Length: 215
Image (cartoon, helix red, strand yellow):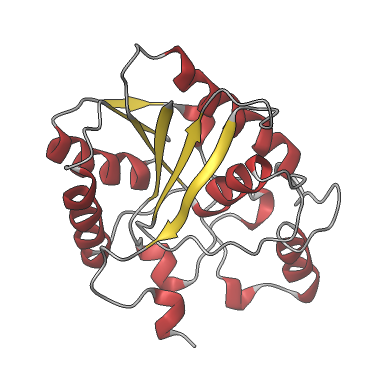
């Protein structure tokens, strides 16, 4: 059985500003660095053999902290990037027009075929995320990889493993540096071979997440 750990990147400056990132980038905050250290400490006992990350700066930094703790090299994988948010990238959420806010919400509210102008659909996101996950099956026997990616991207991946369509309403909370795990095993009742073991675990973190503080 192959176990694959999934980590969302640490808190960024744009997370704190409520600015849309998508495939644009923003550095980790001091809290984000701390979160990455905590999840690194958590997984350092799991025998991680490969740390595979989105090639964006916020994920690469989170991945490097984890890799240092696990004694691994960082492998960049562009297919693990966040959903491309098109014309809304770099915009403050509080500054969106009603039309723009509707575009943003349709990406996570279950609207079929939703797409922000110049952006990416959830189906396109799911296809590349699933391909990146499947590539872990080509690793040497006995490998235990860890993937560092993004909130919408990981939520879409986990949802499709559970059998939901890529555009399904988002109901899984994946906070910064949350830890999930999916396993691949041979079973007559698993059509794809993948099963979700855990999702969104934050028991290793010691401070409230931004969405908890902003309630």
